[in-house]
Image 1 (tube, rainbow over the protein chains, first blue to last red):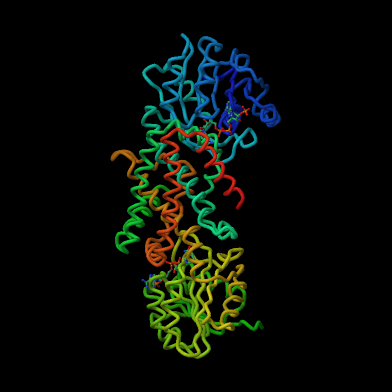
Image 2: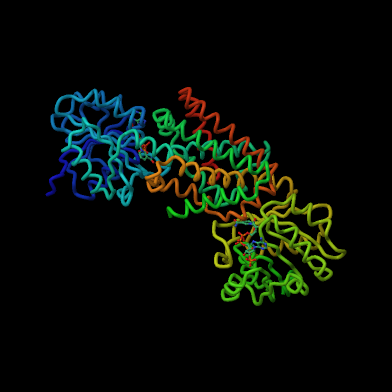
Length: 288
Length: 288
Ligand SMILES: NC(=O)c1ccc[n+]([C@@H]2O[C@H](COP(=O)([O-])OP(=O)(O)OC[C@H]3O[C@@H](n4cnc5c(N)ncnc54)[C@H](OP(=O)(O)O)[C@@H]3O)[C@@H](O)[C@H]2O)c1
Ligand SMILES: NC(=O)c1ccc[n+]([C@@H]2O[C@H](COP(=O)([O-])OP(=O)(O)OC[C@H]3O[C@@H](n4cnc5c(N)ncnc54)[C@H](OP(=O)(O)O)[C@@H]3O)[C@@H](O)[C@H]2O)c1
C-alpha cells in the first residue's frame, strides 16, 4: 500500500470539487472511508447514493474528529469560517487542505488559526465545469489538469508532500507557487473571463427590444462563449470579492484593450484593427 | 425537378461560406454546374478537388456571364466592389445574392448599381466556424441554423423566393428583416462577442510577466471562451468597420455592464454581484 494512504477523509461541501476529489481518490485506491459534511440533506444523500461518500453528518465537529485529511470545498468566503470551526477538533498530525479558487485571503485567514500539530496545505485544482453539487461530480475531473498548491514558509513539508501525491493520484500535474502569484494569474485567465461573460450576457439582453428575444438569434459562437456565464453565482460572488485587488487590476487592463478596439473602429483604423485581431488569433492559436 | 433548380451557380470567394453553400445545394440536387471565382489558384484547386466547384476562373466577367445565381462570399468590405464589377456582365433574369455578415452598408452600395432585369437579394447565414477557406467548407454547415434575408422595397419577389428556397434546401430556417434590424441584432449577439474575445485574449497576454506563459495555465473555460478570438482577422476587420455605428453602440452598453460589476467589486456589494451573476445565468440557461 502506498505511503500516502488516507484512512479517513472528510470532505466539507460535497459539490463538484469536493465530490470529484473523493471519487478520484477512491478510484485510485488511496482512501479508506470518506465522510461528507454539509448543510442540506438532499445533496449529501445524492453523494451517498453515487458512492462519493460512505456516510455524512451535518456536524463539522463530529465529521472532522477522526479524519486524517480534511478537504474544504465550500465557497471561498466560507472557507475561513469553516476552518475556524473545524480546526480545534482535528486530531494531531491531521492535514487541512482546500480547493478554493482564491488563495491569499484564505491563507492569511486560516494560518493564524492552526493548532499545534495540525497542518494546512492551501490548494486550487484548475479544473471545473459550470455545473454544481454532488450530482455534477465525476472521478476524472482532475485528470490532465493542473493543481496549484500555494505553500508558505509555515507549511509543513510532509503535509505538502501528502497533498501533492493525492492530487497526482487524481491525475493532476501539481505546480507550487505563492498565493499572490496564484491570485494574479487566476485573476487574468479565469476570474476576468467570468466577469466578462456575465457582463456580456447581461449587456446583450439589454440590447434587445422588449418584444423580441434577441438571444434566440445567437449562433454557436455566442453559446460557447457564454457557457461560463451560467456558473454558480454564489461561487463567483465569493471569488470576485476575495480576489478583489487583482481582479480590479485585470478588469482595468481589459477595459483599456477594449477601448483600443473601440477607438480604432470609431476612427476607421483598418490596419490597426487587422493587427489587433491578428495578434489575438496568433496568441490564442498558440495555446490550442 | 423543383421549380428552383439552378442550372449554373457562380460562387465568388470559395471559402467556408461560399463553399458550404455550393456543397449544400449540390447535395440537395438543386444545382447543375458550379463555377468558382477567386484570386489565388491554390484555394480554387482545393475547391475542385473537394467537389465544391466544377471549374474555376480568376475572371469575374467570365465567371458570372452565364450564371443564373451569383453568390458573393468575400469579406464584407469587398462585396460592393465585386458586385460593381460583376453586375454589368450578368444575364437578364439572373440573381445576385450574398452571405455578408453586415447588411445595411452592403445593400446601400449595391442596389443603385443594379442593371435592369438583374436582381439582388441580400442575405446572411447565421452559421460559421472559426475556420476559413475551401478546406473548411462542409455541406451541413447551414443545417438547423437561421439564414436572415434583408429584402428592401426594391427587391424582386421572385428572386427573393428563389433564394429563400435555396437556403431552405441547405437546411436553414429563413427569416426576413430590414438590413438595419439585422445589423442591430448581429452587433449584439455576434460582433460584440467577437470584439470582446479579441480584446480579452490581448488583455490576458498583457497581464503576464515577460518570462511566464500565463495562457498555459488556462483551464477549459478560457479556451472555449476565446475560440472565436481565432476567427479570421480580415473578415472581422471588415465587419467591425461596416457595422461601425451599431457596434459602437453595443460596445458602449457592454462597457456600462462591466463597469457595474467593477464598481460592485470595488465597493464589496455582495448582494448586487450575486443578483448580477444570477440574472446572467438565468438568461443564458434559458437559451440552451
Ligand atoms: N466549479 C469550479 O469550476 C471550481 C474550480 C476550482 C475550484 N473551485 C472552488 O471549489 C469550491 C467549491 O466549488 P464547487 O464548484 O464544488 O461548488 P458546489 O458544487 O456548489 O459545491 C459547494 C458545496 O459547498 C456547500 N456550500 C455551499 N454554500 C455554502 C455555504 N454558504 N456554507 C457552507 N457550505 C456551503 C454545499 O454543500 P451543502 O449544501 O451540503 O452545504 C455545496 O455542495 C469553491 O471554493 C470554488 O471556488 C471551483
Ligand atoms: N465565417 C463565418 O462565421 C461567417 C458567417 C456568416 C457570414 N460570413 C461572411 O461570409 C463571407 C465569407 O466569409 P468566410 O468565412 O467564408 O471567409 P473565407 O473562408 O476566408 O472565404 C472568403 C473567400 O473570399 C476570397 N477573398 C478573401 N479576401 C478577398 C478580397 N480582399 N477580395 C476578394 N476576395 C477575397 C477568398 O478567396 P480567394 O483567395 O480565392 O480570392 C476566400 O476564400 C464574409 O463576408 C463573411 O462576413 C462569415
